[in-house]
Amino acid sequence: AAARKINLSQPAMSAAVARLRSYFRDELFAMRVRKLVPTSRAEGLAAPVREALMHIELSIIARDAFDPAQSNRRFRIGLCDFITIVFFRHVAERVAREAPAVSFELVALADEHDELLRRGELDFIILPEPFMSSAHPRIALFEERLVCVGCGTNGELRRRLTFDRYMTMGHVAVKLGVARMPPIEESFLLDRGLNRRIDILVHSYGMIPPMLMGTSRIGTMPLRLVK
Image 1 (cartoon, rainbow, N blue to C red):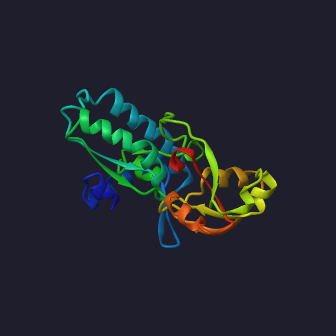
Image 2: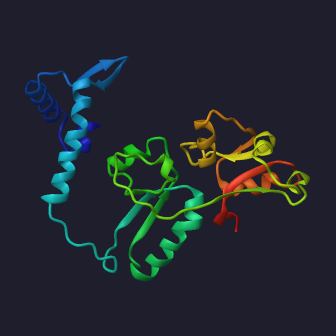
Image 3: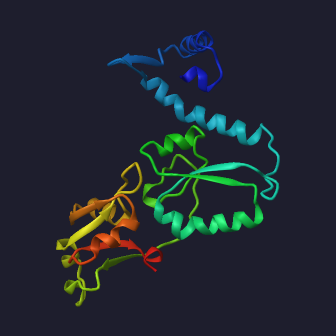
């Protein structure tokens, strides 16, 4: 599999690894429980090698300037339903006007999204800041507020909702995408050793409101998604 990714035959790949082992005087890879894993020396080399390759790509390999209006490129982007609805739909609208031949494939977030980005299988990942990796360049795109939502018949919401009551009420909560990532408020609470009462767990923000109807449960959602 590794040989195919860099367009080498298996014998050529084996010979290349042998030369690296000789140069670094280390096995670099070893079998453990029927799985080939990198040695500590190989893991130590990963970051500087990646940085060197990135420098070569950015500084030596010349690329034509990107012209959106002339491009027919397809971008593969990892993101969740909330970001698709409140942010990316505006991107898609603008691209339709200014770069009509550009297309997108939007994919659900997976456990290995950082690795997919590193391998070039994703072009971008759009995530809340707490879940972003420092291993990749990043930039803030927008800010969002979280609000508490509930059914209009929920008598518990007729008076001011305190934090203590928020924690004891039943929640409809979300785990995002295939990766089942916790939402921001869940990470905030867990970092402080707090656990709320979760009655129903869903896989997208859009499923929260229907699960609140006719109940005394509450949910936490991005403000723009609620509007």
